[in-house]
Image (cartoon, rainbow, N blue to C red):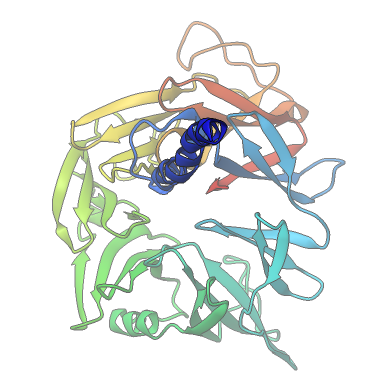
Length: 432
């Protein structure tokens, strides 16, 4: 009997730990999934990985490869395998295409499996053919994407300026990853009709996002010779349009490109007017009254005209009032709440061209890391534009591309895929 009591006393704490310990672990896991957490731990960060694509330029041919990069354990793994070719990353849905069958697939990381996607079938009858385009604009809960099917006639002449034939027709669909099905995008078609967006014009309204909950669609007027212009929010409930018009473009005023937050709550754009460049953070429920403003006049590169400030890329951080901005030679965090702009990466090397870092894309996990591609010369001697040293030219075979993952907490960097032959692109982060 005494032995039985002793055994029970020994096993009881273990039993209680098993019963009450697991919920605590699950609670931490739920916290890890909440992107609004502050100061995440190293254990939480270990789930965030970076998707990188490379594109061979030399003897390697023009084969595109996709890699999964873990900045914490510093591992790089190739993901692409024949016959699947990379198509795009939408939220955390990694999409591939089999060019031989024109079939699209979603990669399932937990099973390392390719699941066929039920996309609209493309027609090819006589001289008429269709192509499919997947839009990266955010839609409500992140489960859906906009798919556009364009119709062409092979007898139409290719426009040398645009590099393609004129579009005869366009059909828009909303595809759901969870349902693996699509439906007509009637709300977006309704918005386009209200905007009188004709597909045959030299420019048109670019779709920037759809909030299905409050029935609002977001657009910006773009095109050759226009750049970024009028911003429009279409209220699909009462069929009204709220605009920010670029009325003063010819008089030195300009509305910059409009960036929509993935949560579809706020938007960012820059307005240049009367020699000043003002960054504006607006609510997507009312874009005409800024929530915050910040004067960027002294921050932007002065090489370009004042109507075209060099904000080449922008990425959102989780709190929605801080953004990462890519300028010509540096990357900075703009904090609207504290009214501060903090440079976190500064590239003074000119290398082989004016490009500095390959500044078209910044991608952040939203809280700790951001990544970009550094385009540089291996034989570069340090120099500063306008300084005492002359910046040397370099041979074209000296061009190098490397992926830089930088920690926002201490600005430390990790370098990945540093080589000469492959151009690179930062695709985005996944929480795998």
